[in-house]
Image 1 (cartoon, rainbow, N blue to C red):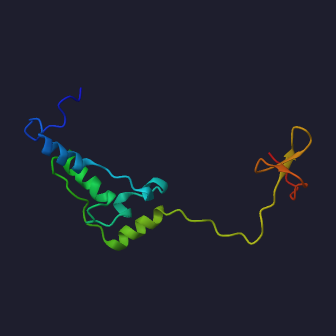
Image 2: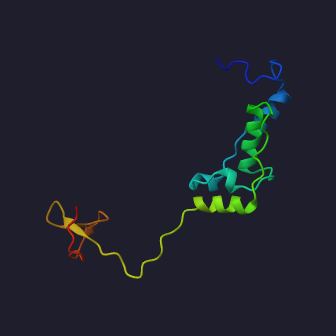
Image 3: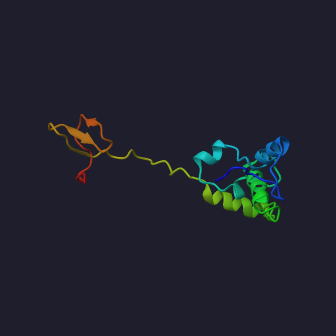
Length: 130
């Protein structure tokens, strides 16, 4: 089904150097930052950086579209940063008092706290555990 692919623009088979250049152009590198955050490379990376994820996707797009589309249209830096910041995961503000632990009866009459560990003291809240 995929035998003989990829092919050149004229349908001919690519030679060894052309194949190497092709796979180098369509390779999408692993970037740990993008593995742990749900950020789009279109706003996470600055344009024009050759080894960025954005540049890798631009090269792939150029191959897929037969060079009809080769790059993302210019985006003002202030807009890029605002969009990037919309994807940032924010930590919740630190609480001034510890969260009370709730307990429920365990299988042998012991108590199990809401985190699933055995509790050695009574619950500090009067709300029942669901």
